[in-house]
Length: 442
Image 1 (tube, rainbow, N blue to C red):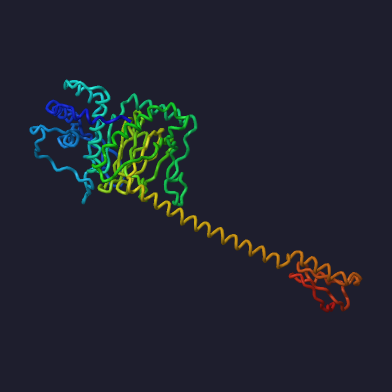
Image 2 (spheres, rainbow, N blue to C red; image 1 turned 90 degrees about the horizontal axis):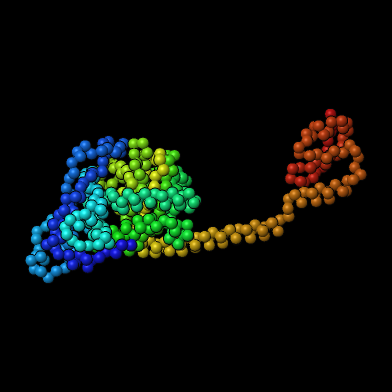
């Protein structure tokens, strides 16, 4: 993970650094995500106005107020500023999500601005400052809209390497069909999601070559560390990175919510590495249904794009059918309190489930024992019939030949034809009992 150098920011000359902030701000442009023209179709469109718009400050006064300490009265003097966003930002009505800006300034552009300003800093410091700019943008967008987009996150070279590493792992057979997080759903998981995934394990020797994927995870972590105190969660953990590939045969993921059961996940981060993606031909858009929008949003899985969103019921989403192999890396970040509550609930449920299972096994054991005892008390019906037939007929071994033994499957009329005198017949009933009757020939 890239370390954040707070001492570097504290040592900046504020009077020289403030113009730099304005320069960086001027290069941060708004590229709205296209909203659907029709409420029910969700079709993506391109912005008709190519002009770039100014967006919220990446490095505004509030940002430096949090990270720079100084005793200079002239510098520390408070000035009027815009009201800061509330951590638990709620939207009483629908809002236009097409106005949500995309952070698109590259690290290289940021470094050029720093170099032009005459500031002597090395690359690691520039990376740290760049990640803080991204974090500021993401925090504002999450609090305003519930989701955020960052383009040119790692650079095209790193993005291409991640694509190659995922291909290498896929060809080595480490991917498996995606499973549902909530196993209580009574449905075939392949009907809901048809991607193939691998949960990235750094201890797995098969992934030793995936150095760029490790870099990606560290860079996303370096953004999230700035969230505490700025979002209504206390984040101190995350899941393993889930590498997902959607094969190009119409694979999809139906509309769902990442965390409907309060399992601790609060932020979903998704990185795409699909070069030259054409949504009209390739499909595979990430269709978002924000609770504060009456139309869905289609986000294309373009190369080097990072998407972050709240993981709960505020952001239902789906992956549209894919007609070209689609690559993505997903990480979930956990809220401490919700995760602890979920773990406690799971432990409690495990105890209940164990008691129910023990009771079920005990009942089965009792029923089995009772059945075995009953079988010992009652002789086998087949054995009883055979013994009874042998015992009863043994006393009639010398019966006349015209004596007929009746069977339940043989017609009594056919059995008695040809008998011209009154005779005694031994009748064997279906229950195995024998009786005697008098027969009169016709």
